[in-house]
Length: 223
Image (spheres, rainbow, N blue to C red):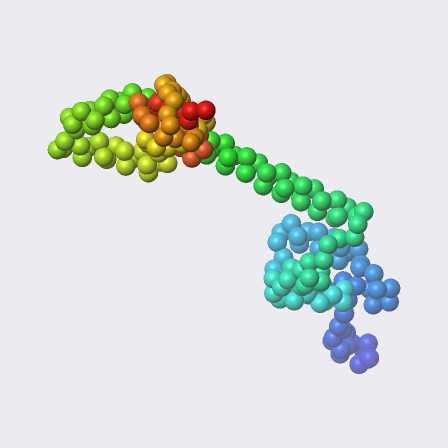
């Protein structure tokens, strides 16, 4: 006969408790099995809630939106103050400033070279047109330029002016050896300085650059 205390059916059900905390409450260290689960979970792709739960076990608060972390770090640097002299950051900053200065100088040189090349191309075109322009001027002096032909000549001269090419040389101008080429000279009591009295071929210039000096006759004052 079985007593009530020995009857297995009369025993109360037993409950078992499994401590699944990843951090040992006594030592505060991460348990080895938790470390292994974290490694396997990273390979399988843990969801965000599990990662946050793991961090909370370690006592770390991670915000749901971490996009402001960079702004916080940037704000920690007061007013973009320069790094301390002699530090690695100061050396990098000095290199950056040097590179910026070199690049600015390079751009200035490149702009000058581009402008010089463009001016050189224009001058070559005008040099090729000078004989034609001389013929046109002779035709004008002889009265052969009229009607539609005269309109085309004026358009040609206007086009040269738009690219900075100027025709110069006129009777009465003071002779300047930098601008004029004297093909004829004669003394005169009517002038006090060397003066142009005849323009055989006008000159052409672009800014300070002389494309072709004006070929003129000059009157010299008598001693």
